[in-house]
Length: 65
Image 1 (spheres, rainbow, N blue to C red):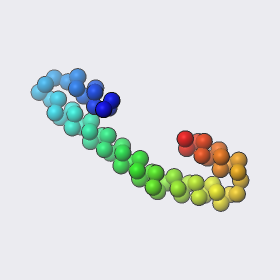
Image 2 (cartoon, rainbow, N blue to C red):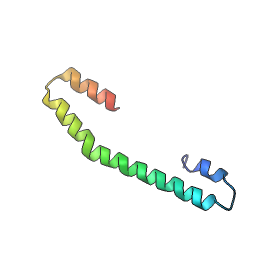
Image 3 (cartoon, rainbow, N blue to C red):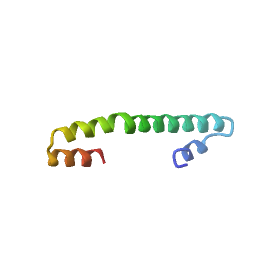
Image 4 (cartoon, helix red, strand yellow):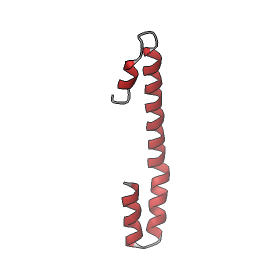
């Protein structure tokens, strides 16, 4: 909702377009986050776990956070 609020500050003629664009951007960001969360992050954590270094794994987890 916070991402859509700035779009509501537009003239009434184009408010639908700006709200739609904001919702599209939110959707694309969500898809990117899902793709990263299911593909890239598990691969990175497996790679760090294979090093068998607890410190490196902890550093990687903290960096991801």
